[in-house]
Length: 176
Image 1 (cartoon, helix red, strand yellow):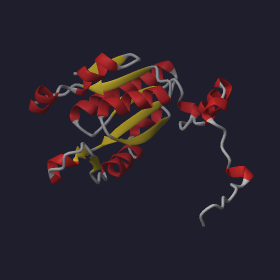
Image 2 (cartoon, helix red, strand yellow):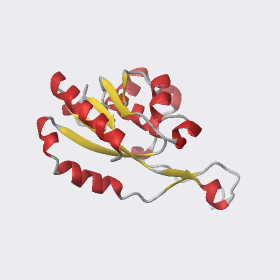
Image 3 (cartoon, one colour):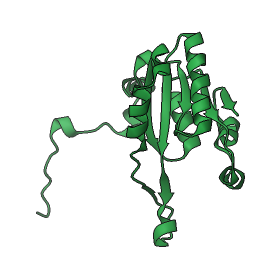
């Protein structure tokens, strides 16, 4: 209908960007807390079921127990660029179905050694270093614990521990 404007309902009208104050932005950030407050200032540990991640988990359990904090176990699911599969030009990432988080969660739930500390399992998808640091930021973690990478993959692409130690905003503990 040319020439006719339909007014927006009053509840759908938005403030212009210039009208937002810094207090509005702070209030929005405070309401966007996705993490359980019981685990704030806990210990984040990267876990994928490998031997080095099991050693990192054991160390993180002791660290959380000594500090009286919670344990945030993070499993990062695989993401691969579609350019590897489809030959596309744009760098688009696709999530590879990964049911390992469910399996790891069941194994961890049955583990006796985790009875000593409160813990949660967080699943993420993407770059391991970025996701571990992001979870650490969300939970205001006191430290991030990871296992060292052994093998040719770590030599070619760089180890997760090395990349994380260079960019993290909190202490990183690397377990050999």
